[in-house]
Image (cartoon, rainbow, N blue to C red; front, side, top):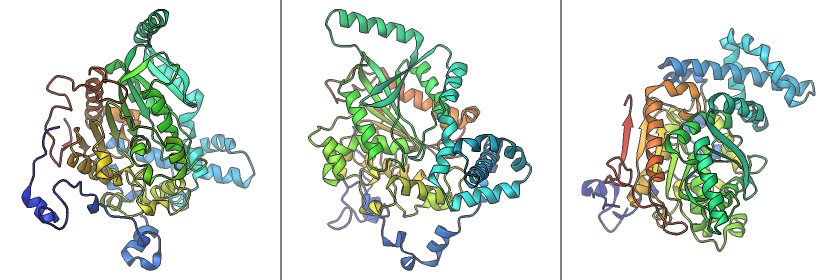
Length: 492
């Protein structure tokens, strides 16, 4: 990585350049607000903070969702869907019916709430302010139903092969074109017949998001299919356990152990993943980054992590791509969390509830655990990361996570880019109808470009080595990076 430019004036303003304050080589960890007792103890909070925690406005205040017709329609649809299922689940519970009964009950309620925006607002806001994780899992569940996933594969996955397998006990889905599948099957058979190791093939390990409590496999397929078609890579969709049933560090260990099995070729999938890119979306970005850093941070790790990963050498992929990642799970409200507190997808009360579900309603987040919140990882661990690119929305409550993490890893010399798409909210790639928006198209094209560069690189030299930087003027490895290596994209 080229030397990072040094801005003496900026260093002096931040306290660097002298004996005190930040050293020029420091990654500015101390500038990220630390969690503290003021985040949980009302007696320690000022009135503004108390109001922020207790009085989240209804999403009607999220004016940014009304500036684009596509986002506006999405907001209305999401509100109506939430209101219908919140009401149906409450009725099913009162009538002592199974949760599955709520779905047919909700169908007529969709039309009823569509005509009553005030009732919709009241129902959804009530669900925000007293979130129930089991109810939210039921609301998200249709995007995981096998029938829905099969329909999406059948209608939109023409020419692609989806193969369900297991990797270190976790369900995975291998996605590839039929043409590539036939070619690689022949190579694997030839290697097996000759007693040679399985062939190396470009692989993308995808860790999905879902607020730690679910995943949205059917929705994710739309952009994953594009990656398969345009990169010729094998995409591996990895599933993991969900909170609150399995809290931290269980889901992270699911990802860590499956990743190591794939990277170290300890599986029977018939190929060796090289080059290998790891991609994490939203909560999956947290799990992916934590899984990669955990072997470097065992002195910070809880006992289950030490037991599972103790003695394991750090093994990095050839590249990392993070999409709208969750990298800071603490209760200290960053600027983006305050500004977008009434966001349709991640309002402040739900953000807090999802974090509570993942950390098992404990105060574990207050210890600044870098495996729980990778943004707090020490400099020496961040230096080990391979090329890392981050894509996020400018209207995302988690925007600050990406900006803070990007600042820290660029200070440590990690190559890559941060792209902020100004008019997009959280997980913009997961809404198929948003793909018509120019900014979403730009982000998807950027992700394809990055993955193509990784997959066209020479295979890594040994397990865990970094890929040889690919040629070409658009390669993410070749551009000099500064402390603020980021771009703001609008309609490009």
